[in-house]
Image 1 (cartoon, helix red, strand yellow):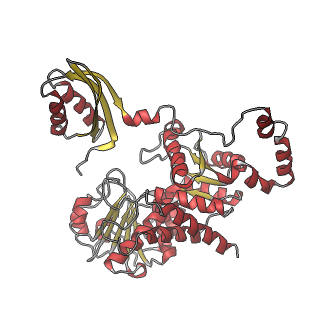
Image 2 (cartoon, helix red, strand yellow):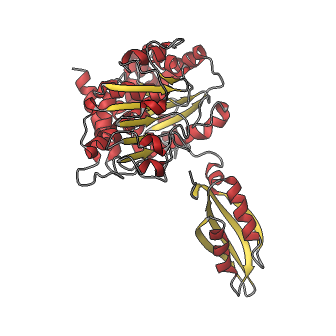
Image 3 (cartoon, one colour):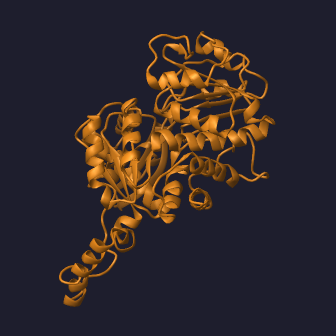
Length: 464
C-alpha cells in the first residue's frame, strides 16, 4: 500500500537562501519531486542579500523526512540552520497540565481552598463518603491506566514509552467531553498488582479507562476490577472499538439494504478488540459469525482452545467450518479485521457476496489494501485517517464516560454500549449517508453530546 505524506511526519526546516533568483521556487520543486508536501513557507527574516525561511513539509516516514532535508540542502545557495520534528515539539514537556479552578489571591482564598477551611469539607465527606462526587474532583475524573504491554500496535514497550499515548488520551477526554483524565502508567505487568493498584487509587476517580493492556490479561484485569469497584471500568481497546464498529456497520448495512440478523460476518482477530466486537455484534442481533485467528477459523472441535477462544467457539461457526480465512470469506457479506496487515487480497474480497462490506482496521497497514478492496466491496472502512470511514475510538469513549459520569453510574454494561453505538450511527442523517460516509468525523459537533445523552438514558433505564 502506497503511503502518503502525513502531519505525523511533519518537519520544519529553518534555512537561508539568496534574496534574489529562483531559490524559493526551487525549494518547493525539490520537495515535491521527492514526494513530500510543503504545507507552509514562512519568511522569518529578510535582508538585501539573504532570506531566512521556515519550510514546513509533510513526509511519509522518518527516512523520507531525512531525504527531504537532503534535497533542500542541495538547492543552490541554501544553508540549513535547524530541523525540527513538529510531532516531537508538540510533546515537549508533555501535552496536559493541572489548572486550578479558583484563584488564590489572598489569605481568605487560601483559608477556604486549603487549611483551615478545607477541614470542614473533609469532615463532611468522612460523614458521608458519597459527597466526594459532589465536593471533589472525583465527580469529573477518570484514570487512564496502562501497563505499556500493548501500545498502539507498537507492542510491549513499557510504562515510560506508553506515557505519551496516555497523555494524548487524557487530552482527548478534555477536548471532546470536558473530562479531567489522568494518565497512570504502571511499572508492572502482573495482573494481581495491577488490580490492587487500581483498586487502591479508585477513591479519587469516577471511572477507570483501561488502555493498551495485552490480551488475555486485559480480560481478567477488567473482570476483577468490575467486581471490586463501584465505578465504571471500561477497556477502550475492547469496548470503544466495538461501539464504533457496530455504529459504522449499522450504517453500512443501510447502504447495501441488508439486515444484521441475516448477514454472514467473518472476523479476523480474536484478541481484546475482536472478542469485544464479537460480543457486541451478537448482542445487537448478529446470528452468523465466523472468527479466525493466526491458526485459522475458530471452531468447537479445535484442540487447545483457551477459555476466551472456547467462548468464541461456542457462540459462532455453528457449521464447524475448519478452514482458513480465505475460505471463510467466500460468500460472506461482511469482513471485520482487527488482526494483521495483508491477510487478504482484493481477489478474496471478490469472492464475497454482492454488496460486500469490508472493515480492515489493522493500523497502520490494513488486512487488505483499501484500494483493492474498493474494486469489489460496496463499503470499505479502515482505522487510518487518510481514507474515508475511519473507525476511531475517539468517537466513543469521551461521550460514553461523559454520560456515565453525569449519571453517576456505578458500572457500564452492554445496554449502554449498544446505546452509544446507535447514537453514533444516528448522527449520520439519511441525506448524508453514502459509501464514503458511514461514520461521522470525531470533530462532528453533535457526536459526543449524542453519545453522552444516550448513555445517560441507558443508565437511567437500567436503574428502574
